[in-house]
Length: 145
Image (tube, rainbow, N blue to C red):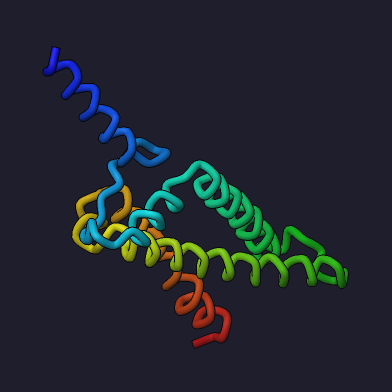
């Protein structure tokens, strides 16, 4: 009987540590409640849906920029030029938000626990490559350098 009660308590404690996607929310410093609070916010359903919304918006922005570069849009129209410019600015803003998201994850979980999660590392790699392409390579290509 006591084994069952102990297992139930262990199960309840495990569920408290799980985030929305089922990852165990661990931090380096258990005595820092702000880190645990931040980790739970970052793993919440609402935050994940915000990230998905940003991804969808970014895909739309990249699509508009590609269509513009391939002359698929009539750039002679003022509103088209404005829309493409807006899409470029929005895309850069979303990349910066993703960089902040990665940094907040590292801050919340600690670098050691962040590095132990392969999905976080993959996310960080993708965000880093996107940042380099958007802010270093893209301006060099369009400046002619």
